[in-house]
Length: 245
Image (cartoon, rainbow, N blue to C red; front, side, top):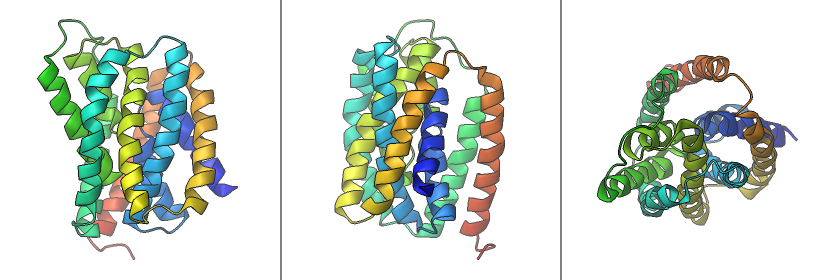
């Protein structure tokens, strides 16, 4: 039941902001369920995949997904996520935790910045493919969806309006997190007894959160997420430095 509730909260946050699911899932798995960084990464990706599929379907029905751009980002991100997942096991856990804390702080800065509304000409196809691959590597390596990078990339490089960028990012994350999750599952990094209830909660949360994304004020949500994320990042940084037990 606890896993379901945690997944529910993550799904709502993910659907509202287009990011934040994996960033909060990994620390939640480590703190609430006392899992290792490796297990938390694999399980977190599975949960993110479930939430991303549900959210992208909901946003897609509301015509808030640019499927062409999602394909350009999503296809290379699948390969990138596999590479990132395989790289994960080669890096010491403390190093991974430190990198996760750094990425978390970058995510906070990205979310708090005013996002452009996607004016101007779309970027070239090779550029979009390259960014998609890089985002996939990040997804597989750290267990994060990368929405905090994908949303601004879509607005800046693909000229996608903000409200569609959030929905489109979910479709991209669904593709990359699937390949990353399968790679971790095959390696035994994601226990199904934990993934299943969290994923079910995340799906319900994403279905609830997606319709609310166009109604609730974005600023208070982002500030609340930023405060929580900074606390988590500091905890991860201290743990990486060996200052926490």
